[in-house]
Image 1 (cartoon, rainbow, N blue to C red):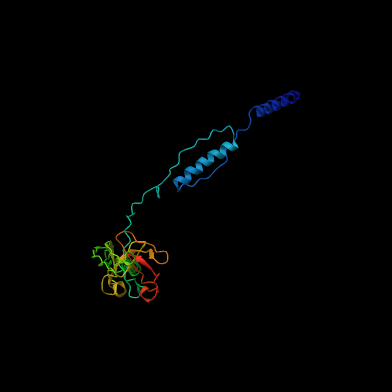
Image 2 (cartoon, one colour):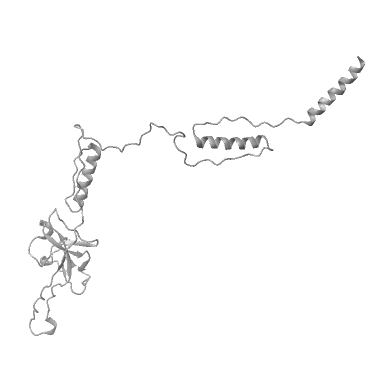
Length: 252
């Protein structure tokens, strides 16, 4: 009996020594990852490796490359069919297109009408509309050559001899015209009636000429370039025939 009492302390010491020599092994935390998405599954597994390394510093994480553009389904369906193109909308009896009012100036009127047809087709459907070709009209170049005014000589006094201004010989672009084919001037020019031709010009759907919108004459006496002459600007209220001797004009 006494021998057993001596043996028990020895056995207890041996067991305690083994427990001290063999430390408890570090366990990584459990992580549940989704299996229905390849990208999420890969990212979850890599996150689990990082978490395990933080919990157990001696653990060496093993990362795997994740796909960038995974398929929508891991297993293709045998019943899947290619999608059909969206058919054009079918006309309905209750669908009404909005009325479009277009400015009757070419080519703005053409592009406006095409935009109205497209909006109506997209809203109410029906047959595909036919669009017009809206090419801009090219301006026609008019070259006018007019004879010079006869020299008017008064009494033989050098100081009173006056020579009339020559008619202009410059070339001008044609502008104006009817509403269906109205022609505009380039930027910086204005459309006026040709003062050397009969008729009312653009005011009554006739043609005119494009001139530079820059004043000549007036109090300062601004001169025109060579080959052009200064004529009265009909857009103002000043009339040189009614006392307005210093009226401004335009070079043509």
